[in-house]
Amino acid sequence: MSKNLLVVDDHLVIRMGLKSMLEGTDLVVAEEACNAAEALAAVERSVPDCVLMDIRMDGGDGLNTLGRLKLDHPDLPIVLYSAYDNPTYIARAVALGAAGYVLKSAPRDRLIDALNTAASGESAWTREELRRVTGALATPRLSQELDVPLTHRESEVLRQMAQGLTNKEIAKMLGISYETVKEHVQHILRKIGVTDRTQAAVWAVRKNLV
Image (tube, rainbow, N blue to C red):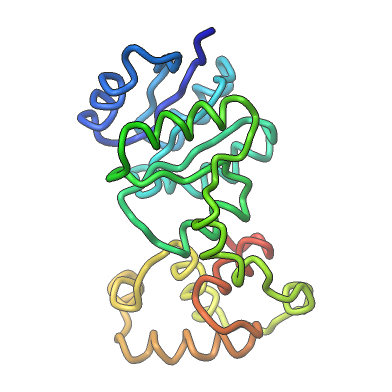
């Protein structure tokens, strides 16, 4: 029995490639979307068996879209499909309830297996992926529940950190110096009681800051 798939990616060549890659399998690309708004509308029209979604897209971040879709469709299997092997992305994806995370450089069999597993209602996460983010996901809940007095600028920097941006990218985005960003990051980690950026990203997700 075929499984209907919604593919969300802002590059036509990726969507075409996925259609070709999945030919001859039980996975059918029933709908396509190139941004967050189209993805949300497509799911409302007809809930697919599984969603395969890019992270960095024009017109909306895939992780934010994951969170929005999960609010209305908590049982919808969503697999993230990204060119970035970024532990912050992976930790956020786990925290937001993604069914799995596949790199665009992964073999065809890995993608097909992940989609079939997710569409069957099971977790498509590998042990290695979960092992990498275990520490971040075990961030003490006490820190999460405290009312941490972050400044407006620190909150801005934290949101960009949780999007997976580097210090250099954050500096460019906010129009401040690299050294200033480094200072803000150190203050943020100390204030919220975590030791690295990935833990900070998970904390931000749990506080609904991203």
